[in-house]
Amino acid sequence: MHEQVLDLRKRPLRDLRISVTDKCNFRCRYCMPAEIFGPDFEFLPQHKLLSFEEITRLTSMFTSLGVGKIRITGGEPLMRKNLPELIKMIRQVDGVQDIAMTTNGSLLANHAQALKDAGLDRVTVSLDSLDNERFGQLNGRGYQVESVLKGIRAAAEVGLSIKINMVVQRGVNDHDILPMARYFREQGHTLRFIEFMDVGNSNGWKLDQVVPSSEIVRMIHEEMPLEAIDPNYFGEVASRYRYVGSDQEIGLISSVTQAFCSTCTRARLSAEGKMYNCLFASAGEDLREPLRTGRSDEEIKELICSIWERRDDRYSEERLKETPGLAKRSKVEMSHIGG
Ligand SMILES: Nc1nc2c(ncn2[C@@H]2O[C@H](COP(=O)(O)OP(=O)(O)OP(=O)(O)O)[C@@H](O)[C@H]2O)c(=O)[nH]1
Ligand SMILES: C[S@@+](CC[C@H](N)C(=O)[O-])C[C@H]1O[C@@H](n2cnc3c(N)ncnc32)[C@H](O)[C@@H]1O
Ligand code: SF4
Ligand code: SF4
Image (cartoon, rainbow, N blue to C red; front, side):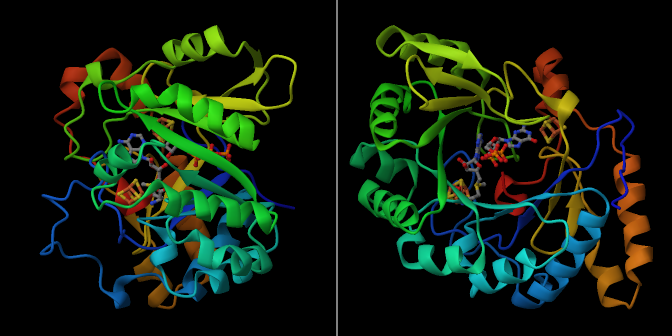
């Protein structure tokens, strides 16, 4: 029987999002702007990263506290060597119901089969445009759209369940909303539109660059009629819509205009083993030191419980009320803890 841990706002701990590396082959401006994450930027050295054994041990502690959903993220998770090995190890942990991975897709084609064989259930591939020139600029490294589409095709061929994430920025890729909707409707993959967020300290976020989800729904509905549908599970991040007369759907992730903190059940583990209670947290709590200094599972579980039980985070709800003040807070970088 698994325990249930509640935070100060009575939110249960259900999901664990594990960042396996802080490195990435892309330099998306909204996440890792090249002028900050340049050639001199110091990424974590290998010995500071949690080992696969350490990640697996922590995962089993989290599942005994009520976590069932695991998401592997980064940085770019496929830059971590032997990732399928880790998936295999997590798959064997009692209580793990669902293992998903968020990836930029550029390295997916070569790894899809091994990931599927290791026990990965789902991939979410990030793609912000189908226009090669724009995509090359958005990813900051000139990667072609085709490299990502190839990854998506490979994932579909091996039977991984697939979603596509698109971060929408006004004046940057809002023209891509309809082409993306048409293409992925035809491909049969769920496309989710993410409102551009003020994560980290360096992406130059401004409220007027956010395209509200309501506007996106209106735009698509005019051409391809949509109807709202119920969430799949408690605390689902995306609001779901179905194309009328089909099973094909889209999702809207509206953390700016319709914050969903009241049902947030997600803990985050950084690549060096810090636990974060919120995507916008200023600091994490170190779990690596207790792992490496011989603390027992019971002791570390107690620590995890105490971190979650003290949790009062609800950054996106607060942002709705006081955007200017919040801009001054120091926040962890998204590439450090994943999305
Ligand atoms: N503000 C905020 N944004 C989040 C949170 N979780 C996810 N997001 C945003 O939503 C995007 C998509 O998240 P995913 O990991 O694909 O969503 P998910 O809910 O885990 O997906 P499913 O398990 O497929 O429902 C992330 O990249 C973030 O931009 C959260 O807790 N807070
Ligand atoms: C940090 S990335 C890590 C995984 C992988 N590298 C990828 O891009 O899918 C996870 C997700 O966060 C999203 N993301 C990054 N910065 C964001 C921002 N400022 N606002 C909204 N979403 C963002 C990305 O688009 C991606 O879908
Ligand atoms: S969003 Fe993903 S692909 Fe883009 S820079 Fe961040 S970690 Fe890399
Ligand atoms: S802003 Fe923080 S508390 Fe709110 S939904 Fe996102 S991670 Fe959860």
